[in-house]
Length: 198
Ligand code: GAR
Image 1 (tube, protein in one colour):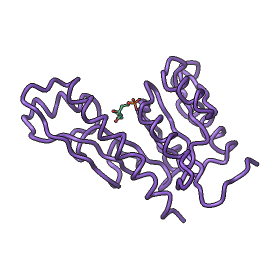
Image 2 (cartoon, helix red, strand yellow):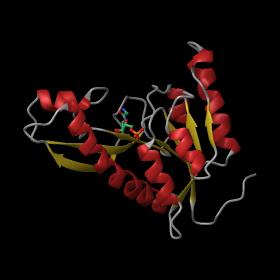
Image 3 (spheres, helix red, strand yellow):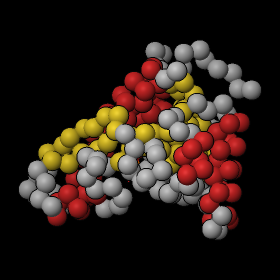
Image 4 (cartoon, helix red, strand yellow):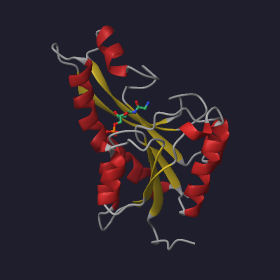
């Protein structure tokens, strides 16, 4: 069994891409008084830029590539779940993990799996959130951290951050500004969550 630091929840971060949110979670978890520490990073693709960042930060980072599993989502998720258990993980944080989860993995981690989504849920679940916010003429955009449930981006929200939409925003400029808000929101919400977890 892995060694546990008392009072500090063992968090795994699941990524598919750049891992900028993952990086802020790792950094927050390395503070002396942190409520959690990131003990494992898993990517579903070997191309994820976040893997090298985690590695450089001294966090075990591995790829469980979904492609060899084909349509067998359950087998892919069983491999992920086995790694989470092997590393003594208590809380899972999805951070730009772009695979839909089956009810099986969601159920295994019910109440202990969080996600960050780049919109003010319940607005704009799914993809292309920034383009949709701009097309709707919204004055505000933002991000939400929520508990993961079976419905995509539907779980109870734990926190939101808002950013103003500018007249000249494109989906890219808005995404960049929302991502800065994500980097403050996710560590704060995850810290609170871990402090109150029984
Ligand atoms: C973030 O903006 C996150 O909210 C989004 O992917 C980005 C990942 O960036 N997640 C989703 O769209 C999930 N539906 P990162 O890899 O730099 O953290």
